[in-house]
Length: 106
Image (tube, rainbow, N blue to C red; front, side, top):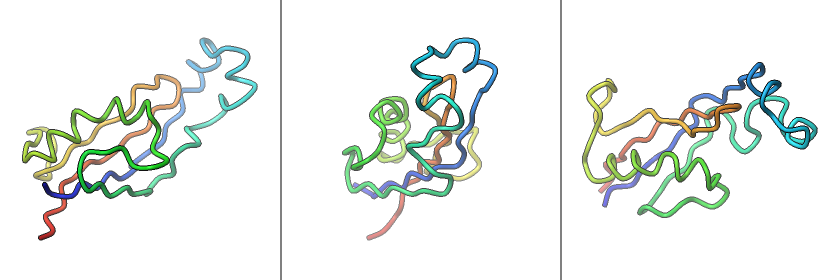
């Protein structure tokens, strides 16, 4: 199996949604700003389909479909680079956008 590289493209923050729907506990803790788990440009290299150490469990569950597709040679016609996908975690308050790409290293 080819290696997979996951790159954090962008961390976003939906302030209005967070203020309206975020619980008091969430707002008092980590609710003010984009996801603190990742940084733009951060990269993870996978050798197989195992979640990398430190990778958010929720984000992993959300993007695992695209990881598997790319790992096994699939692609997405709406992405302009072959063997890659643009995907995100489904956190409506502070989603993170990822690029998933197959690395053809022999």
